[in-house]
Image (cartoon, rainbow, N blue to C red; front, top):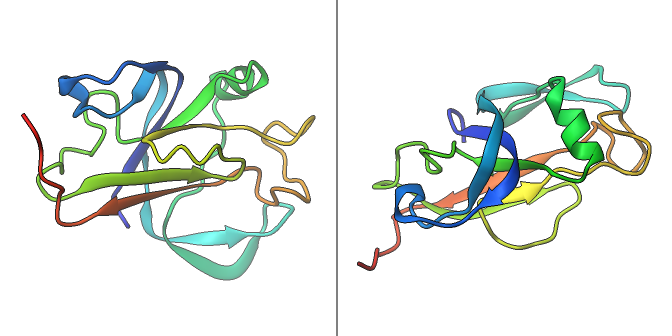
Length: 145
């Protein structure tokens, strides 16, 4: 889905009404990672394959993210801490965030992990470093008071 924004951070904050009862990052490291209409698919060396991925984005890790990943505390989340559904909670409900090495929790955040010794480097297990996919559903589910 083009235009959906994700964030990275560390730690899990408790669910709250302000966060639409979704889990969010306790501390954010990066905001504004927004999917594009089309993003080049990369090969195991990080070179474009000539194919495209619809509704995706590719980003390089910033200086804080590899350090957090080394401590097993780097997370990706849908939206931001203050807007986990990107301000579109009247249109979408959250379904799941899935990652390359996933715990299958079905929540709005997921740890970002890499095969041992490969922080941010392509490997045979995870050819493009790591990946994440978010799902939303429409219409929104009924909200309880």
